[in-house]
Length: 499
Ligand SMILES: Nc1ncnc2c1ncn2[C@@H]1O[C@H](COP(=O)(O)OP(=O)(O)OP(=O)(O)O)[C@@H](O)[C@H]1O
Ligand SMILES: C[C@@](O)(CCOP(=O)(O)O)CC(=O)O
Image (spheres, rainbow, N blue to C red):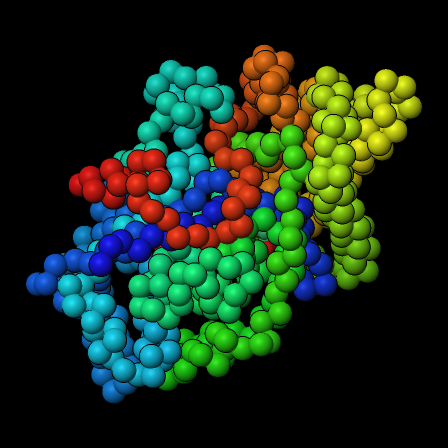
């Protein structure tokens, strides 16, 4: 049997940090071209019922498990010869996905044993963007520019243990769990490849619910889940599910629970509404610095909200209005491109030449068609809404006493926003010092030194106190998790076969 490979994208929560924890609000989630891959293959006859999971980008990252069956239950136990520290996320993924497979196959263990007759060898690797490339660019003597990243081989090694790597906050564990769970569900014939390929199928929803459950269990809490939803469904306007749906499975000992009623329950009420960034623009991401502790941010913001309900609700409603307006305008632009591509392109060409604060001077520009003028105004509104979100998120940070957009990040984003052709920006997710996102105009024939991307790369070099290192990702329009062919993914075969 050939390899079963599933990849899932990383994510950026461009708007809706904190609010998305509450079902009353939604967030703008952009999925990235950077992906995590799980490659599941058969082992050898002497390894029946053994599952080896390897992470070849790290040292001492091989986890070995044995699978046994007892009284209609399947047990996945860690083997003592594993060379690495425990990996709770991987262990729980194996245990619960196999348990679901056994349930779905009516407790007939021979179906699972058949798949496990040679054991399984599973390699998991992530695109370079999931980890900071700052040190590698430095050692190669390359400038901190997106173009430099193509000099680093795909799936490059990090030469450290997993626990010591500098992550970029793109949702590595959600993308990993989604790929691993989906690949196992396919391998054990719980879902079919043709159904999984459909965005709205029961099979893809089952992969989502299972990955979401395992990710919550591994994290020890039911979070908003936007990262798993992005990994499964791609860019979206996300509204969370009611956490109660998972409650029956969140106890310490679920060894006697059955999974099917919860994982196929119609009460999963998350909403992943279609979203994508407008044409002729590009997402730019940069890794800024390690340093913030997101869980403590969340605790502090939620505590402040509880203690100051009135002020918090006013602020949250204001942020939500800006978030929704931003999403609506961005979606409008995509439609405008579909119906008026030429006017749209002339508007984008025009705004590429000036920073957004000056776009108003194009109002009533007679050389633009009326439609192009309207489109240009909508780009200006996008800029204004995103700036309003930043301002309100800073206010929330001040009120709750956490650095959601710290002053150094404000200086950095302001420096970027004063460049020609930049549209909007922010600190993703919970904020802090970790990262920034930007949306810039992207006209295919613009010369490199005239391109907005080049302008902001220059601006990065002028900021003090922060070291900005680019990431390669753009938005993924592929709509989430997908089955891959090993030969179609550059460098994947080499990455999983090296020792
Ligand atoms: N490459 C990998 N190989 C194996 N296990 C991994 C890998 N990446 C993550 N994990 C598992 O997921 C756990 C949590 O990972 P991590 O803290 O990177 O997730 P995260 O909080 O989603 O990260 P991010 O900051 O990217 O959102 C790790 O402790 C490990 O168990
Ligand atoms: C604060 C929060 O809304 C976003 C955290 O996002 P990130 O991991 O910082 O991208 C928490 C959540 O939604 O899980």
